[in-house]
Each structure stands twice: as structure tokens, then as C-alpha cells.
Image (cartoon, rainbow, N blue to C red; front, side, top):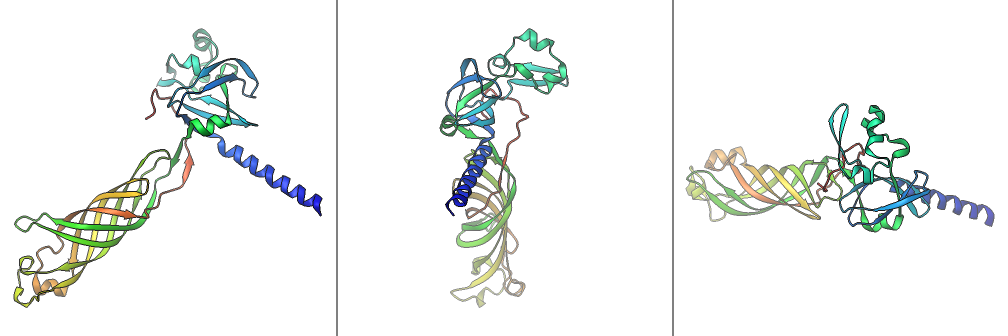
Length: 290
């Protein structure tokens, strides 16, 4: 009984370790400068080493035991279909041979950034990858849904400007834009739907004001459109909305704000984001992190 159980544990352990290695492969950028040892693609060390730069992007090619084999993204910019503009750092981080060898190489190889034996690779400890680098992932654009609170409403109508407290909750549905996983802020456009409490008084109606009692609370349906920014778990935005009381009530009192726009700030709760996907690697190496 012990032998099959031990075999099963080893099998599960190996599977989890392999999955962890695969999860590490992808695009990163350095937060801090670290020493990177030159190596071949199989991990065999070459002569020399280079210091990384904060903000420098690199791709993890393979994990070998406790080390990662990486390739620094190209310090090149496409000028046209046959020419790449080189940064001086290209021959420090991307290419082993000198400029003459590069110039004499096949054009299609250069444009594909396929440098063969002249490609520079570096070997770094996995612990450096975990402590001093950040995974460059993209969270895809997605639908957003949650609850929005409007603490007040400002009605900017000419000759009838009004500022009132309006503590109410409504459902919010919208669209969260794609963003890099390390970005602090995310942005969404939302539409809001809520039931609001409206107080009618003599100043806000043009008919039958004498019928109004001291307390005149009516229910209105509110629709809004807005732009919301999220920082960590905190969400806030600005919204433009419209209130509509029932047709019967409006016909009786002629509420001056019926269907007229109001402005408010909104605070969101539980606006959900999309899934993470690996960022592409066919991009130019920026001088500074954007």
C-alpha cells in the first residue's frame, strides 16, 4: 500500500513543480538592478556578466532548477520594413558580435530579431526573479458590474439650480478598459440604474403646489452614465444622470426636474475586473518604463 501512495505523491509533486516552472515563463521588468550572468540558451555559463537596469523588460525563456534563463527585449526600433534603428545598448544586452557582423547578417533575420548564436542570454537566480522583478501581464478589457452610491445630486438647470443630498444605491453595469497588471489605477465607463427618493416642494413644481403636504416623498427611476477610476479597492467617479417620477405624479404636479440632467460623484462597490493574460513579447524595448 505504501509504494503506490509514495508514487502518487511523487507524481503530484512533480506535476506541481512543472506547473510552477511553466507559470514563471513570460514577460517581466526589473524593479532593481541585479547582476545577470551571460550564458547559452541551455543554461551553460559564458564569459562575462551585465547589470540589469530598473524598468528594463525581459522574457523568461526557461527555468532550470533554481535559475531562470532570460532574454532582454530588443533595444531596437523599426524604421521601415528593412531597417531597424539600434540603441547603443543593443550590443550590451541583445547581441554578442560587433556591428559589422550584425550589418552583414541576413536582413530577414534582423527584422525577425532572430540572431542565432549571437543572441545574448542571461542566467539569474529564481529568487531574484521573485524579489526584484515584476510580471508584465495584461488584464483584458471586460464587463464591470456592482453597486454605485450617489451621496448628492447637483441640478444645473437655469433659474432652478438645486443641490440636494441623495444617499441612494443603484446597480452599475459597464466596461473596464484593459490595463497592465502592475498599474495602480484602472478605468471604467459605467451606466447606473437605481430607484431614488424624490422630495417635491413648491419650488420644484409648477402645478397644484397647494396639494403638497409637509412631507412629499416620491419614488423616481434614475439612469446615469459615468467614468470611474479604481485605486486598489477604492472606486470613485463622476456621473451625469436623469430622474423620472411616475407619469401620473408628473402630470399632477409638473416636476421641473423631470428628465433633466443632474451631476454627482459616485462611489463604487465590488466592480469586477477581467482575467489576466500574458503580454505579448514582439514589442520594442523602451528606454524607460511607460
